[in-house]
Image (tube, rainbow, N blue to C red; front, side, top):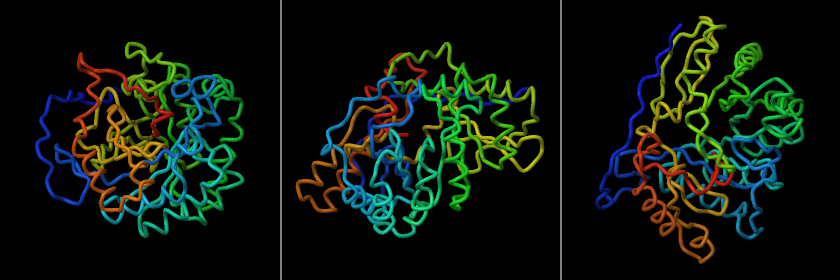
Length: 350
């Protein structure tokens, strides 16, 4: 079975021109950011080879990261003044923050009606899932690249698969729905992708496979050796009947396939080979409080300094709008001028 993915688009040079007087986070290509990703720590309890070095990332000074009060204030500005409709907390690993429940509760209070989500590796959810839901967490994505214990230990440099599986169950028991799984495509786990999908379908969990991007801290990513969406679909098609569903929400990164004509679907996020930059609706804050409009754009706008210098909300909102107006067209991985970002995924936030 052959499953078509189409062709990626390579962005071209562009003059942003003057910024229009609008309240929303609009960029010069007409995209509007509604989805806010906030990294709240650089620390992580795993050492995934596609993200973290074996020793972890250099520790940030304690006063360099945003406090729970500062995070909630920015969430309030984003929702009230800039039109953000969803907030997702990332890391590193957000569960490494002892005050995560406070961060979520304050953010939920600052932005009533805004969806609060989190991406996590699941370690520690058995102790905290219920408290996080009580604080205001609505949705969760859990990273799981394989259900083979040996492959998991090799990829994450930690023998903790049983703890992740327990965390997934804890999230479900706490009432979080849907629970989504994120799996990064890698050479080490491609052969087990079918087992992972079969397990996810049996557990009624929605699985999304993600192409690995050049955001690893070790700098070993090599496009000629990466597992592409086409490679993955070829592997899965030998075991399952996959029927294209498409991308019902154009701003959602995953293209969906129905599995064996049943209700279950699997998503594929082809970040490299089928770029969806033209529909991107995301804005990002690093753990240090800088706006990063694109994963692959090294330009950052410091909001922490404004927060700590008594700037009012209107000033902070306008700084944020300026950062987003200058957002680049896309990552341009297919262009000769492409350069890896200086920060790794663990330092940027997913």
